[in-house]
Length: 379
Image (cartoon, rainbow, N blue to C red; front, top):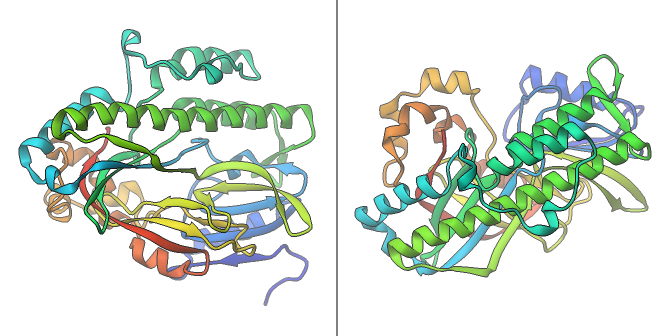
């Protein structure tokens, strides 16, 4: 039975919750100042607070409900080309090689740094140590892809228009910001840590979080510009920047919901107001979707951020062989030399994106279906 003393929790699920996820959600539901929780169909276990969870509070900020990759999100940009040009093995190989040079997973040479936008570069972070990291690692990692589930993909829609899609975040800076501010929080129930939004500490965290979100968005845009040079050289394609969609899925923001204002935390969930467009990626090598929000207040105007993991990384690496990854990626260009390093990112390590989409049909409507042609990942 539902406990009326606890805040409402609404779930959109592809299957039964694991015991561990159910316990984690129960702990969060009992945490102080929690007003409402929405659980997305891509929910899966993570440290402290699960990925795929939306949390509303009235006065407390929970940095753990945002996570370390602050501002991690998606950018989709249309091109003026069709997918036909990318079906040539020579062109695909040229693009993969070009992307590896132009968009490394991590940049190590300062003479190769890409400049950040001036309006971002002149804003200082709230703490001297964070500012030092921003000037060092932050400068080096700007416009780098990272590893794990971050990727760049070339896809086609139902009209065979070629699209670019990028998934990346704030890199080491987001984690440094999270860790610094978590250290200054008050411990609640021995597990969660919180800041008063109206306190000096809360304001500092929100300032740094806003900067990290802007950094991540600018980084995705810079990577897309670098990718444009590569694909233009290979197949003559140009970006149609007016046909772009951008969103992030790790953040907290003050939002109006009904008659109340809440601090809405999203850890692995997009914000999609009614009519707003977002990017819902599948796993490496599966369908992705451009979706439009329906404006569900029960979900705090949110959507899943992707397929969500079905296996842990260690389980996937143990169960999925190099040959199996290559089988699952049949028909999609990727650097097969990296197969051993990215087996934990195989499509079968993730939930079925179509099942995720089906379970949240009352949250979003599909505007466009994308099929992968080429996938580039860092290691």
